Image (cartoon, rainbow, N blue to C red; front, side, top):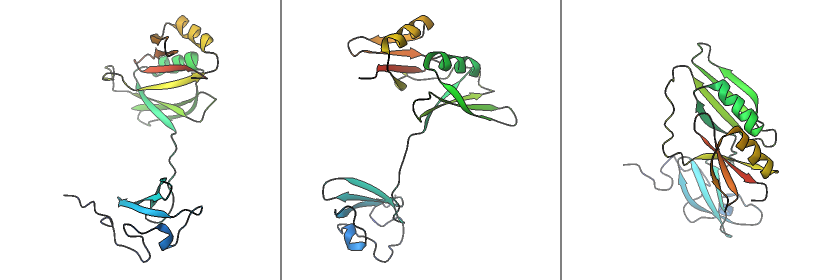
Length: 186
């Protein structure tokens, strides 16, 4: 059984907060608010401010900052997928990683409007389509000219689902991944 009690993940250092102590009592006060130790787990400290804001820090005191950078789709035909994403969503290759033995290729695509990337992974030995389950996950693109985007995708024949009441539709890529298209002012 794993011990999940506060402090169970390491020795308590001098001046380290205990349950119920405020961060101000052990030397850190941020923006005039007292931060109360909520819990400790896996080397992280979870603090709650007097206004109800949550903050996460490592045991060393550094605030963690997570940033979403990419999503991955595994593909059977890399060239077909690259062509699709270029034509359908104006995406272009920004980085490529190729295995020395030729067993895989990873290509990162960007749309030129955001920092988020789509990672396409091709595996040489994969021959059967990927099992996407119920395909309940998807990417989403906002577009400034919804009607023009819809016309483009309709011409390409890749629209697989539309919801006119919500004002959205979905495209299907060559590997059956769904991509949602939503108007800028959604």
